[in-house]
Amino acid sequence: MPKQQTDASPAKDWRLEQLEAYPHLRGVAFVRKPYRAYSPRWDHDHCAACWAKLATWDFIPDALHEGYATTRDYVKGADYIWVCVPCFDEFREIMSWEDVTLRSVK
Ligand SMILES: [Zn+2]
Image (cartoon, rainbow, N blue to C red; front, side):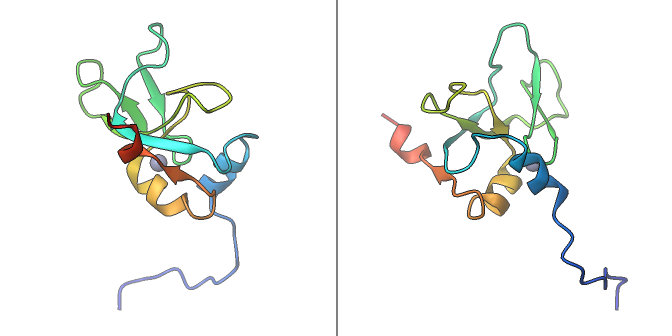
């Protein structure tokens, strides 16, 4: 048997704590797309949950280049919050997120 965490204490996932620190992040819509900087003065972002780095290919080749971003319905606007794909899959239910990627394709 590989060594496993046997501690069954209901310690809260630290990534979820990150997400819950944002006051407006519950129940919002996200679109999956290639990373794009929110502001021209920024060259990268972090996943709001696990803090993985998201950047465009030319700036940081070993960062993530795709993720889920908020839409313009979000209080701070489109592309303000980024979440990496694994975190989106893991927390979408608990955070009541909606994936509107298909709806945004014209
Ligand atoms: Zn993440």
